[in-house]
Length: 169
Length: 169
Image (tube, rainbow over all chains, first blue to last red; front, side, top):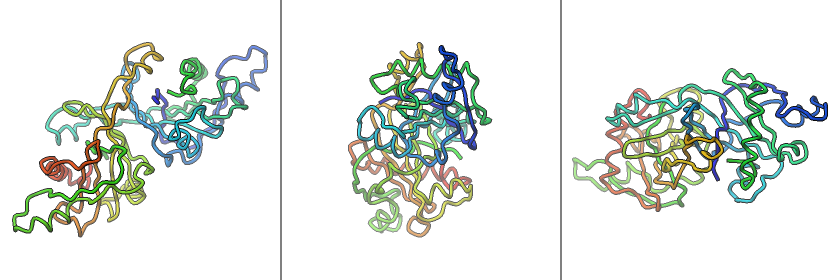
């Protein structure tokens, strides 16, 4: 299983109520609260490791992807789809050269996390988030503020391209 | 705090009794058992995340650095040296391009862990490992076998270059 840019930073709990996709029925408020997280899950920094990732291009970032117990158990069992209650997130940082490590290695080869950049979560609730494949999405900036609507709208369109892995990549 | 190539793979517990540095007193056997781990610590894959790392050069690898509770508490408190009982390790994998992710992003920018490569630990015991700065070292190959003596001898000479961070980098 592979994982994309799911970004987390060590921020305190913040709230975000936003709209992933504009309502076509006029019930924008209902869709907003049903598709996005309202706050960062407590204790996520103590969750267990799923994987790591590195993005170049415009991102140039490191991710450490973590999962709560439900997500970890599902991930290790290899069974899809993820059950309700699974939450996946990633601590994301800039990808920077480490002068300290390079000095030890004697060559420029080492990269470590720089400043945190942002935080993202996917939360599985097959009923609450039925309109987006059973997943709720969230993205918080490094200062703890939620991403703007334009950013949030980009989550589901990409994730729905990976149906074979229950929208997780 | 920054971290170098500490490599872990998901292997079952194996034993390694080796010598970091040749004894200058002729008591090689005693030094061997006092400087290295005898087996991979149980349950390390459930430890909490400390950091991630990426090495280019000859390694071309990803590391996820994990710590047991004692190590995590020390790391978060920012107090050095690490107390006895602290264990730090890293799951290490090859650093490979992700075709799946690149297809989603629409450009070649994404790297994910490839096959696991090896596993390393540092174990703090200020008395048992007094001759190597209070740390015991271990390196296991991807098949679970311990690294040869030549490899193991390279641990301490590099780590002792980072005394300011209690040999951890």
